[in-house]
Length: 234
Image 1 (cartoon, rainbow, N blue to C red):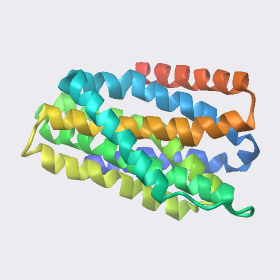
Image 2 (cartoon, rainbow, N blue to C red):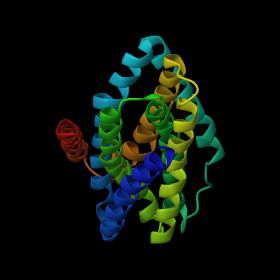
Image 3 (cartoon, rainbow, N blue to C red):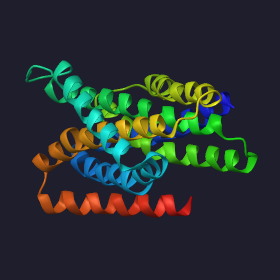
């Protein structure tokens, strides 16, 4: 089961990375892509992660994990802060955004693996694996867009896809021995807090600086609507 979870997650993230790589030539329109990604991320949080976290452990543990996630972001943001450099500032900012998103999605994948490992129903497991695959595709696009704009290679996309998926396999092992709704919610909301603050400060904010507020808001709403419809189909 751990291998299936690992492979399906890796495949979905890699497909998303390939889609991001195919669109690498439109870096002049990166603000549009960033606005769309903002809508997709906020949609994922609103339609999937938040309701699941609240249902699993309630509002208190969800809020605690969310705040802890934002606090960790602040620490990492200061550690990964790059000095201004005329020739490399933009590239380094893309890398920083990618690294923060990488960590966020890796943490987010752990409770998914725990849920998979704790489940004993074959039908639910099959549905969960299918959802995991398609759920990982937009995450891959979001994760790799800044890294591709920074010049990431196809081999690096494959390697990162595997690395980010490792927590799913680890979670399957943990889920087989320990099922704790409170801890599961903390992990989910922790990742949600990190993803949210990364989205606002590293994706939405730069997009607003490179385009008009109206265009960014419209693209964000389009992304939000698309992911809502996509998740509805699943």
